[in-house]
Length: 210
Ligand SMILES: NC(=O)c1ccc[n+]([C@@H]2O[C@H](COP(=O)([O-])OP(=O)(O)OC[C@H]3O[C@@H](n4cnc5c(N)ncnc54)[C@H](OP(=O)(O)O)[C@@H]3O)[C@@H](O)[C@H]2O)c1
Image (cartoon, rainbow, N blue to C red; front, side, top):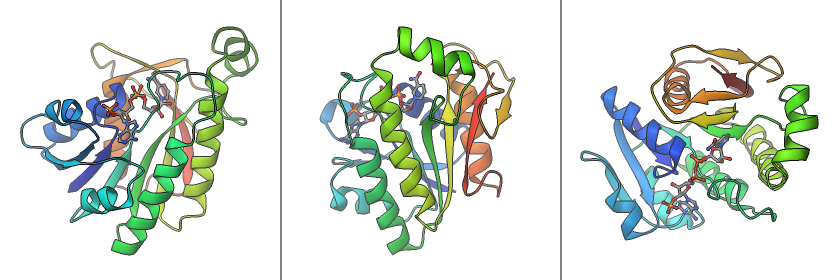
C-alpha cells in the first residue's frame, strides 16, 4: 500500500511514518520547510509544500492508495481559533475525490462535544486545558468535512499521546466515553494502520485509549 501521511514531523505523525515503514508500506510525506523535510526517515518520498496549498497536496497524493491526516497546530496551540486542520482536510478530501482515492484516517480528539469521559469534558478541560476548546472546535469542523466527503473516512478521537514503548492494549468506544485518558503514540499509529486496510470504522468516529 502507498500511503500519504500529513503532519509527519509531529509526535503522532512521526510514529505513524515509522510504523508504516516497519510494515513495508510506501510512504509519502508533505514537508513545509527544509527542517521538516530533513526529518523524513530514509525511504520516504518527501514533497515540499504547505498543507493549505492545493498544488502541494495534489503532488503528495500522486499515486497513493490511502491517507493518514495527522496535522496539528503544535501542541495546544495559542488558544485562539485556527482553521488549519479543517481547511487542509477539505483540500485533501477534494483532491482525493478527484483522483479516486477513497480511504482516509484522520487524527481527531477525545472531548468533542459528544465524546470523552464526563470528568475529561467537564473537569479536566475547563480547569486544566483551557487552550483545548479551539482545537476541539476545529476537529468538529474536520469531522463534518469528512462526513460530507463521500469517502471511506474514519476520525480517530485520541486522548493524550504518550511517548515511550508501545503498551499493546487497546480500548475502543464509538462514543469515546468508555475510553481512558492516554495512549502510547505507537499504539495509536498501529490502530490507524490496522484499520486503514480494512472496512473497520469506515464512515465513523471512534475513541481509543490504552
Ligand atoms: N499530541 C497529543 O497528545 C494529541 C492528543 C490528542 C489529539 N492530538 C491531535 O493529533 C494531531 C497531531 O498532534 P501532534 O501533537 O502529533 O502534532 P503537532 O506537534 O501539532 O504537529 C503538527 C504537524 O502538522 C504539521 N503542520 C502544521 N501546519 C502545517 C502546514 N501548514 N503545512 C504542512 N504541515 C503542517 C507540522 O509540520 P512542521 O514540522 O512543519 O511544523 C507537524 O508535522 C493534532 O490534530 C492534535 O490535536 C494530539
